[in-house]
Amino acid sequence: MDRIRIGGGRRLAGEIPISGAKNAALKLMAASLLTEGPLTLANVPRLADVRAMAELLKSFGVTVESIPGTGLAEGDTYTLNAAAITSSFASYDMVRKMRASFQVLAPLLARHGEAKVSLPGGCAIGARPVDLHLKALEQLGAAVTLEDGYVIATAKAGLHGARIEFPFVSVGATETALMAAVLAKGETLIGNAAREPEIEDLARCLIAMGANISGMGTSRLTVQGVSSLHGASYAVMPDRIEAGTYAIAVAIAGGSVELLGARRDCIAPLLDLLEQAGTQTRDTNRGIALHRNGARPAAVDLTTAPFPGFPTDLQAQFMAMMTVAEGTSVIRETIFENRFMHVPELGRLGADIRVNGDVATVRGVAKLKGAPVMATDLRASSSLVLAGLVAEGETIVNRVYHLDRGFDRLEEKLRRVGAQIVREKE
Picture 1 (tube, rainbow, N blue to C red):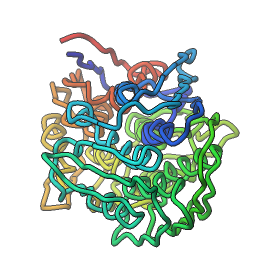
Picture 2: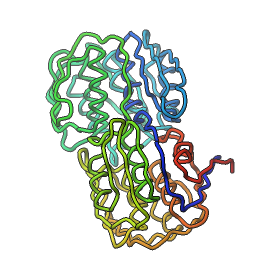
Picture 3: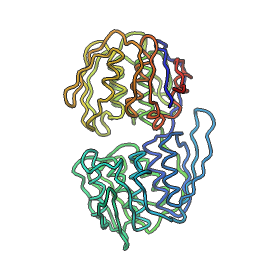
Picture 4: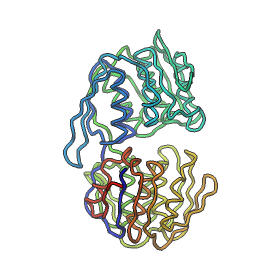
């Protein structure tokens, strides 16, 4: 098992290319099931989750070809061909590797007429619920049952248009409804839809494949069903969470870095808070440039919220910066429970954080002290790396396989801008 060793105290300078978005790429790969033609995706990040999704698609009969990109600035190119779906069964062993695997349910059902897919992680419907996904499919005409931890969905006569109104915003459920509706007969209206940029990216890819979708970027999507989709070529959008993480890296370590491919419209709430904390941000013709001098950042409060609010996937990283801020910050997590698992590990580095329910109060300290820490999940892993950049001495982050699920060559990119960071075998 790998670990990452970090020597703190180095300012960052240079350029970091932003890879394709994991949360977009995985759904675009699943969308290949909707057509007999080949779907070619450029700018695909090199991640464990991408490889797991490719293996899952192969189990359905999809042929997968990949061409590696060159250097850090170019992602891989995948061509996915689902000319014949030979299976519509997604086992627990496959789906448990990553929750996004559940997104194959809608395209399998819409095109193949049936699907049997494990509940993600073997979880019961409840926390991070999938019941919104299933209710949307039922409204579109599917028969859905649960049996031994699996969702069994059938629509032998095809799906039909419907009016779907989500009781609360759900990214995954919006994606499920969208992928099912594109091949449904008639019109589908999706209300209270999630507005995340990755959903717009999915919609634009589906349009390139022949879908009829309007309302992208708003909370109301309209889909006119078509009889079939065709192959297409599409480039995955830049990863806003990766861009935000590196932006925070500059803010916590200091220095001047240009994030190539980063888009302000995707991370505006973060950039606003970074500016309040003392980091300068500037749009360039290649992305976003950030600069912070040697002063400690100022403490600022944040509350996570669905897009266009502050993303929950950047909360842990921002908290790492607040641990060395001047003053006290209050961080409220409104999206997921148990999203403060990084707090005890930051405490091992000397952070002063108190958690009460969904609120963390962070009292900034003058410096952190390097220590061995344990990664608990993907975003927590990156927060520990960021803390290590500024901690005095050496920080060792263990169980970094979490990082490989969501960050494309993180240590190489940070080392490129001057960080003292290496990956090694335990």
